[in-house]
Length: 332
Ligand SMILES: Nc1nc2c(ncn2[C@@H]2O[C@H](COP(=O)(O)OP(=O)(O)OP(=O)(O)O)[C@@H](O)[C@H]2O)c(=O)[nH]1
Ligand SMILES: [Mg+2]
Image 1 (cartoon, rainbow, N blue to C red):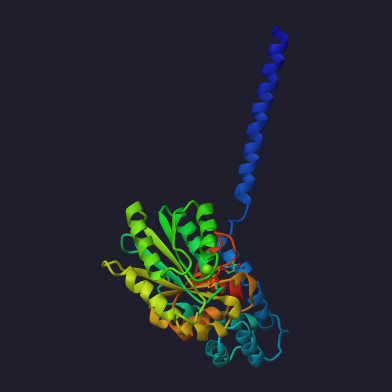
Image 2 (image 1 turned 30 degrees about the vertical axis):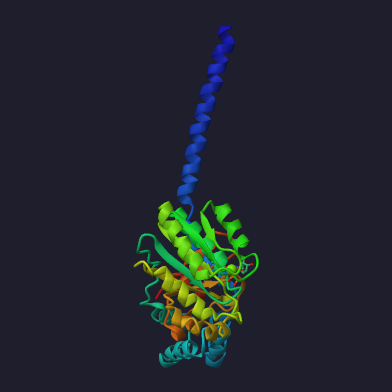
């Protein structure tokens, strides 16, 4: 039937033309769309929305009204920046004799950037395998952060192995096992009550045997009476270095929702040789300013922040994105 073949051909040509037109329109629309914001900025922005709320009163006060220095200091302290950082920031704006909201914002931005500059925030992975140990008080988010780091490193093409050296808390190893299975990452753990340092050492042996390039060790958080937690952690780090290996990173996991009171606890971990901080639960707090207090008081870099309970909810900490999220993106 030549007639129906001809009409079929016409339809096919029409469809092809339509396809080209639609594709071109889509391309034009894509080009017109503003560039997507960096996901880190938006996640950080969402995580810090409550802290930002504290600062809104400074930016939104009526034009011509006196700069509310005391209120501003209170707001910064309420965001848990610590008295030192809050005073420093207010003094900088005050000394500059500023009154306009935008000028104050620019000075606050510059002061925050200055405070956060100069820290080494890289995750150092040296050694074969590289060794990362996570420490922190109970409930801070260590086990979850082990999983998040494993996920992150695996996504970057590394082959992590996780070691469950929390042999104190009931079900600690099953919590980590669930994560390991979900992420498809190998895990070595010990029986409840086993020596955590031996478990960590076995995990190192397993990592070497399997050719894993990063070992991430989870530890207990609870202070228990028969052992001293700090002794236990120091022993883990010591034993991991027994055969000439070096622990690349000892990351102190801190819960942002505990704000300033977490600092006193954190100081006790100093003797374990902490190299950096992971600040968790930044998504659920108005106290994200504690990053400044941590760096002021502990002289430790915040290397990562946790912004949720999922394996992808760990962001490398970046000073300028944090400042943008806090005071809004803009000049200066
Ligand atoms: N919203 C939110 N929740 C988190 C984050 N990190 C961890 N959590 C939650 O905090 C709770 C405690 O986390 P864990 O990882 O078990 O904490 P831990 O430090 O290992 O606790 P212990 O082993 O008991 O010392 C869990 O419910 C986690 O899902 C985060 O960044 N944001
Ligand atoms: Mg745990």
